[in-house]
Length: 544
Image (cartoon, rainbow, N blue to C red; front, side, top):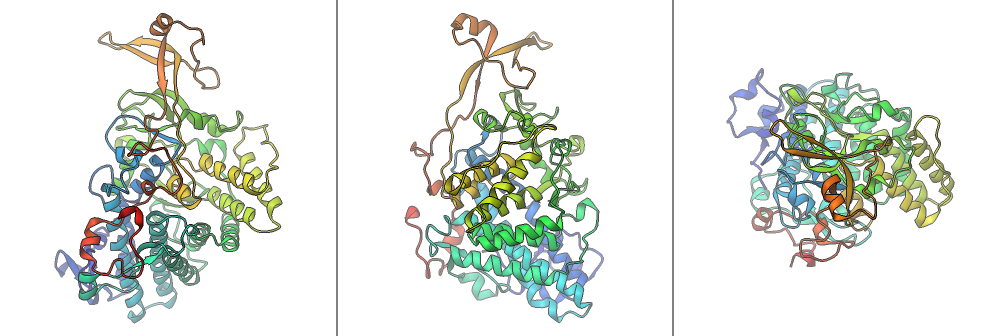
């Protein structure tokens, strides 16, 4: 692990542009803790810099920070189709985690370096003079950040907690790393222990961050963890750890803190690029000076002219899961993506806010997720089935076009859970939950072949080259060729449209539950350097 004795990772601090203090006299590779923690402003800079590092650390343009992790997780799922261009092929083919691809390596450093910074803040802040309320806020944000990162690790490096609570996961560090620890490493904890650490950290954050702390109305401050965010994180972590009562409680509280606000149709279709959206609880806003995280929109935005890779497309079967009067269905239409001109079912959910300046904000949490967490938790709690049904219908009704209502929810038991999980897929599509949900619910990736001939609009470019685009009806649905169309008719008037190109695991086997290909894998560097890694819990058999 990349730690310096008694030092704080400069990558995080440098990201804060620390210039107007004593810190700029320190070495260029690390900063002595005593030099950093002279005042509360410096301690706050460590937290701010850690988040900058979380969003900007990378090894390639297809692995930029936490935004890339979210894209990876959706590409690895059932409902996103990757078309041919640069980036995320190993994510889509499910070789990135097991095969220790670039996203896996970026994830490891992106998480553990900020954890070490949080540990330093937690250890040193009580010794700094200053306002106690401000101390509590900074310390609480350090705990909450660390809790979020351990939750991220627990949900990616092990199978579901109820599959094997004692299965090996990752090491837990709660103190700044000293020389001996940096050279030998700590044993990996179990998945239960990592979730417990995440939940305990989030509780400390919840208790310490003042309820009246206001991060302000500037878009660039919406990544800061306030009481609403840490409440939402407690709900999310409790859901993943299968603590249903807590998941229900904190999701309910988070909803109330946001007045249970759900986006209107116009807001939902505005591009998912604005951290000041009233439904958003947590987001990272990019600026002209800090726009690298927005580079991920070059993959996710498939329709804005001048866009780049545009490979984040939709499974045609996924669109058919929506009610005909559900306005979310309108976000998926056949066409030629703007980057490579390849025919696919494009998504109109994610749009650059300003492509010329590479601007667009990154969504991390919103009220609809809290609805879904509360609904799923209620479905697991005795006596709350009716409430789960009501909550699910309430969310669905909010996504219906004006004048329409969703059907009544009558399912119970496992069938109700399946409906809730399906609603998560529809509502949170493209927001980074696909792989985590597959792992925690012990489900399988679902992909099936789609290949059909569609009627084509035929035009020509300036060089006379023929361009075919699918004909769409008034509902935005593709018009298929007649079933009895001859090959000659298809060649003259139609075009072939297709969905998933990858329908099996890398070894050629069928998709299944609890596959090694779903997990992120402890990096080779960590296995070689950490002498104690598997002392407490044995290496998973799938890696032997």
